[in-house]
Amino acid sequence: EFSAFDDPAFVAGVRAFVEAGEEARFVPHLPLKLVIIDETIVMFGMEDPVAGSADLTIVVVEHPSLAKTLKLSFDAVWSSGLTYDQAEERLVERLAQPA
Image 1 (cartoon, one colour):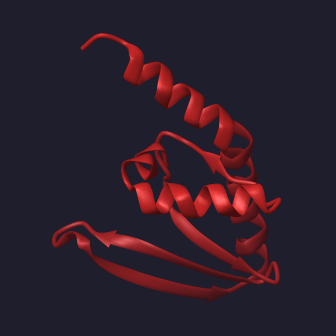
Image 2 (tube, one colour):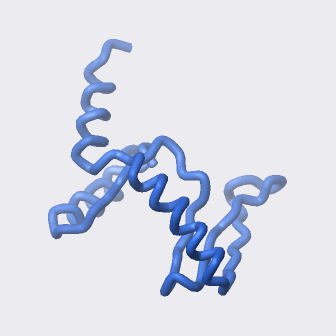
């Protein structure tokens, strides 16, 4: 998410990984934070609608079809995201605009 640029330590960490050859993408909002393991296990955290973002419910499901479906969703969000350089450039442009 673009909000990651609010944390200088996080930005430095991402930059280090990108400089080491990793890829990073930034989107305005992530609909769901998830991990897909071996294309068969899915782990995701959901905010508690009553308690708010401080409390997460972590769900782990072993189901290859669900993993495949969520991978398609991940790929769609990934392909729409900006690279690190593009996101940083957009941030610089926004900061340069008068308030």
